[in-house]
Length: 424
Image (cartoon, rainbow, N blue to C red):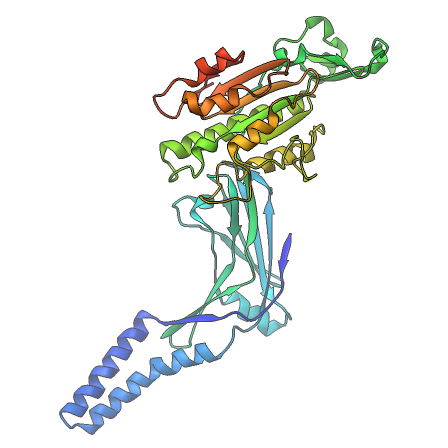
C-alpha cells in the first residue's frame, strides 16, 4: 500500500455552464444599459455579472478543505498484460473530525488512469463511505506492458450557487509495472533435459534420497513416475535427481529491429509484444523446470544478464530461484524491451550485445533465441552467437515478407522455425 501525505495542491477553477450563462447575461445587460443610458439596467447587469466572478474568486482563494490524505493499494503488482488489477483508493481528511469527514464525502472524486490500463472505456468506480472518509474500488485490465501511473486523485467541488467549479489533484501517482503476458500451456524442455550433467566431477551416483518431485511433463521417462505421489495429488509426479543439474539456458530476446514498436495496434507493435511474450514464456517455463536461466536483450546494453563485464545489477546474473523472486528478475528485464528512444546512448548497440555473447557459453549451455529479425543482414550477427553451446534453437517471428532468417540460422548450425503472431 502506498500512502500519499496531505499537501496543498494548485486548483484549476472554471465557470460552470450556469456561471458562463449568467456572466454573459450580466455583461449584455451592463453594456446595453450603458449604451441606452439606462443606469438601472446597467447596475442590474453589473450585479448579475458580479455573482459568477465572486464565485470564481472564492474557489480560487479558498484552498481545498479539508486537506486530504490518500491511501492507494494495487493488487497484484506487478501484473501481467491482460490480468485484472484491483485498485482501492481511500480518501479522508488529514485530521478527521465530524465536519472534515462530511466535507470530504461531499467532494466529487476521480482517478487519472492512462488508456493503456483501461482501454477506451470510461472508468467507473464503486464508491462507499468509510468511518474516515470515502473508499473507491475499481478494476483495471492493462493491455500493454510498461510502467504506467495510476493516479493522481482528482477532486472537484462547486460553490454554493453552482456557478464555478474547482478541480485539484491530491497526492502523487502510483507506478504500476506491467509484465508481458505469458503464453498459456506447457513448454516442453525434453531436449534441454537431455543435457543433464553432474554437479561436480566425481559426484556419486544419485540415490533415492537425492530426489525431488515435480509435475509430469510430456517426454518424461515413465519409469521415473512416483505412483504413490500421483495417487495422493491426483496428477502424475516424476522424480528428479538432485545429484544432477539441469543444463543452463541462455534466452536471447532480439527485438532491436522493432525498437520503437510503432503505434499501438500496428503490425510492428503487435509483433514486438508477441516476440517479448514468447521469450518471457520460454525463460519462465524453463526456470520452473529447474534450469538456470539468463535473459539477454539485444537492445539492452552490455551490462545485463550474464554478459561478461556486467556491473552486478539485478539482471547481471544467472537466475536459479524458481519462486516469485526469480520470475520477477526475468520479467522485469522485459518491461522496457524495444522501447529505447532514438538517439539513446545509455545502452550498447545490438552488435555490441551480440558480440559480447560470442564465445561466452558455459559447459553444456543451451541457447534459445527469440528474434524478430527476418533479413540475412539482420540475422547474421545473431547466427554466430553460441558457437560453443551444446545446442542452439531459434524462434523467428515474421514481421514482413522477408524469409531469410531461418535459412541463415540453419547454415550456422541452429535449429530454427518461424512462429507467426498468435501461433502455437
